[in-house]
Image 1 (cartoon, rainbow, N blue to C red):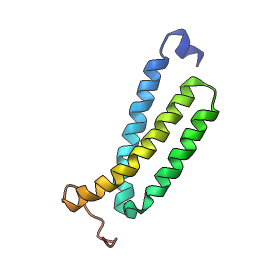
Image 2 (tube, one colour; image 1 turned 90 degrees about the vertical axis):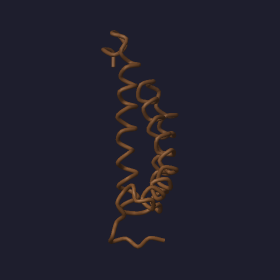
Image 3 (cartoon, rainbow, N blue to C red; image 1 turned 180 degrees about the vertical axis):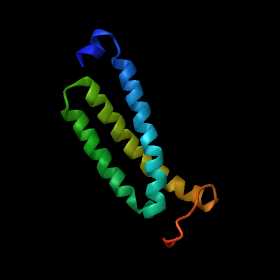
Length: 102
């Protein structure tokens, strides 16, 4: 971490981490809706609560910020799950043939 502050790279590292976290949640939403439907929203809620709690408890600015981004992305993903269901209904994404649709 001293390397990041010495060379003033903390903001860049947080930006790269944020990009990676958001990039990770995109396929998580798609796969989650495909395999479990919107019923997995509670997992994103739990993950968001844990991440934001961790963000408050962690004293290091870098890790606290990334945990907050993780938590916010988790909460955002709940809404995206329901949007993903609509995208599947429109035929934009494949529906899981093994799972019954409501």
